[in-house]
Length: 563
Image (tube, rainbow, N blue to C red; front, side, top):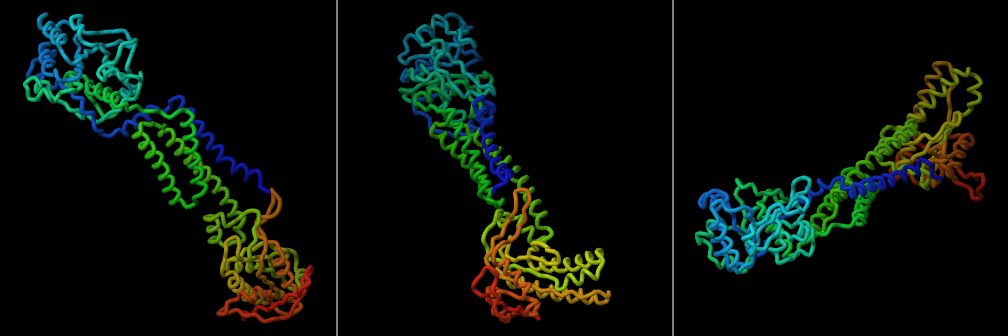
């Protein structure tokens, strides 16, 4: 019958799993670790081939140095439009909300170019936070399409999402992509770091260093890349010019590269599975080095799976899953350490007086070798008893008798333990012990023989001391059996003892008493005698047969010869 403490020990890991899972499920739903999750997800992006029809004309430092100070003459943009007439669309990420500082003629030149342009021209609108227009192109530029160029960084300043429409005003990228913005808000797919898209300096286009055929049927983005113009944004791929962010958004729309977040239910299931994997690994793998490698492997698998799914545009809450796995592992290992420490203390306290320290250490390293509750096993069982103990005790004072018994039992116990035996109990002057449990011992018969021989020798030494002290000598009888018994913790839930039960135990006690009848020191059963190796220094001699109480068949008995 399992004790309440055992049931609690088995249920507690389940409570840990459920508690940790619930914590991280709640954390996921309330976005506790979203910022860290996003920073890790940012690193999943790798350089990818860009659409062939997107080109950036860069207003870089070299172009500004050659064309004049910022803002540039609008005639320059008029000339640029004239050289890009083979393009499909031209998106100019430059604000024309104020009159040109070079005069009205400059504005008129650009207005004329916008009016006569074959490709569709897109000019920027800037919105306030509430969606109201803050700045828009001059009325004279009415022939161009207008779209907002605002980008929306997350709380950590990184631009990860794009919005295609606000208050019926389309985004720059939506118009550039040909109104592909079916999704109003989506995670941007970044193709690479700066200059991943083909980038041509503005001055090179104006100086005819790039043939017009290069821009045929392309979406041309025109925008600032010069550091002094401060039109940059933080992205998962590092700092990018604003114009290049728009190029990435447009490419995402054109190629429909939209990420799908896992549902709350799926996220919860994955978090729970991660915690369960931790429990399964810890429960099944006992060797620490193997367990460590397994746990690292599971954590590696979680993150590799997240990266793989990311390449298929599926995002799972990998950080929450990893944290749930790590937290479950840490708490379960701490719980297991505390539980095993208690178990080891129990084992040490239960066996320290009956087993050698080496055997106790082995049991503590492999607690499974000690099965609580009982199991069948073939063991050597031993009984010994002092002959004429009543006569001896009558001649001694109680204190002297106790002292004598302590000397005798200490010698016998030390010898049994020395040869790998477990002292089960003392029954008055009798000693009960066994070999082969809780640790399996293939040499239990030989070990028991060596123990019995040494017990006899040490008893002779004790008798010499007793003779010098003027005290009566001690004679003992010993019985040994080899047979199948039940071994384990037996008793009640509150009080139990690690012991053995079975016919072989009863027979060993009977053989010990038969030593008086046959006038020998040690008697063994037939199974024990047959188990002695041919090359053993121990031999046996048949004494005859006895009939054990409750048995009809006679049992052969043998004297163990060791002198």
